[in-house]
Amino acid sequence: MPEWIEATFLDPSSPLRKEEHAHLAHAEIFTTRGHDVEELLGVVCRYGADAADVRAIVDAANQPPVIARGQIAMLAAPAS
Image 1 (cartoon, helix red, strand yellow):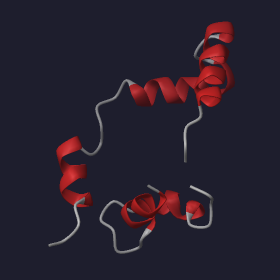
Image 2 (cartoon, helix red, strand yellow; image 1 turned 120 degrees about the vertical axis):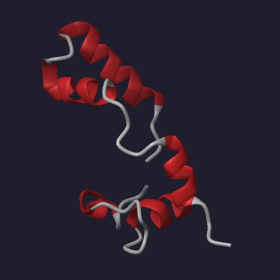
Image 3 (spheres, helix red, strand yellow; image 1 turned 180 degrees about the vertical axis):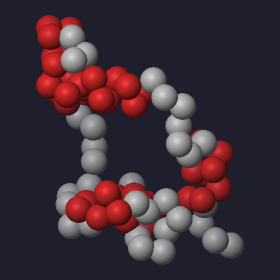
Image 4 (cartoon, one colour; image 1 turned 90 degrees about the vertical axis):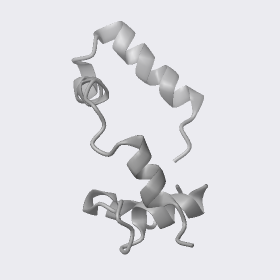
């Protein structure tokens, strides 16, 4: 999975690369751990979505995707 993430989102020649991902080039790449999700849910349950900048995540999640799933599959598919 890390290789696919690097090739799809971090490689400068990838059509899905974005400059805001550049800082991840040397990172140990994104498993979402159950604890992370549980912690986020706990913050929202205790303090609401406006706490700790969670509102931005909620707002983003409520928007349609910028890139459709079919486009991601097409762009991420290896060239034949």
